[in-house]
View 1: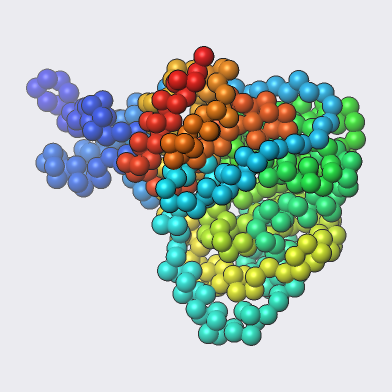
View 2 (view 1 turned 180 degrees about the vertical axis):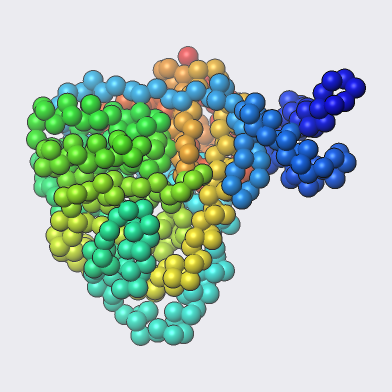
Length: 476
């Protein structure tokens, strides 16, 4: 006990707390390591540990496994977006302008701050290890690497995916895995295999705009099912849609949804699968963010609760390993054969060399080691971006708080036009995605999707300040 009545660890906690209060340590920053602070303050490591546990109990810092302690972002400053009810009662066609094409065109422009496209930064990816894998494939499997590898794809890659699926309770054989050109092709052939022009597709909304474009191009109709920004698709709302009319398929994002970052509980996933089974309707899940949980193990997907083989899982390595490799896959269950045919018609094959290199990377354990680092990076980047929004956006802004992935759903003050925000941001060299793209009705016009796929930097900080000023000027 010290003379002022405080324990030594409480004094250490005060030192760190003051660093946070004065801005020396900002939300999302890593606090000094136990050993570093013990040397600086000339106290024991155990004392520093007690201090950090005290600060963690006060919700000021948080522990991240195998990484250390980080300053937390105040949830009070960043309330979650509200669930937006859909008043539309009839299926409708999807119609988009050219905003989507512009956003993708900006993805690789070095003079544009990339907050719009959900791509990982190259510096976060294992470029040297992937390059080595490609060289080994060319040296050892030359004939295979330069030849067509017709559906279902490279056997070893499919075996590795089946093994990884088993880790989360999905019992599939390698022969049930179909390799695709990214998740985009997987989603397209899934829709083509279960529905036809004129059919109605129920989609969890806000919905990834590429799926809405697919539905439009295939001549199908869409109904949007409300989703909670934290817990995912509203099962009661989906049940209501089932009672109104025939639904040909349901499309959801159960793990770290794009754009909200929502994570469905296992109970809700099981209930969703049961509801679709009750109405004999296939469920298509996009699970591209599933490997990117910040804490704990990888969440199970809907396929883990599939007892009738009617769930189609679509995923890829685009958000974790190499977007340009275009290596995706599907677990089609009952629809596997039909999807094989659609794959053959759509593109014949997926690049053999990237399949072989990815298989080698997985087989030798490189992928899991890479994921540990990548998850830490995304978690830090998401927290930095959330703090930047809290600091620079106007009152009334609400932000999702994903526990995985790197996309965030930002609700702007009511009546703020996100399309105008997008246009003005673009003139300032900043790419964002306006919320109206995530609905067939444009009903998310006061929302933005922002992506934290790139490391935080002074450039990113300045971009958020500029974006905050733009939103403030446009807010009513």
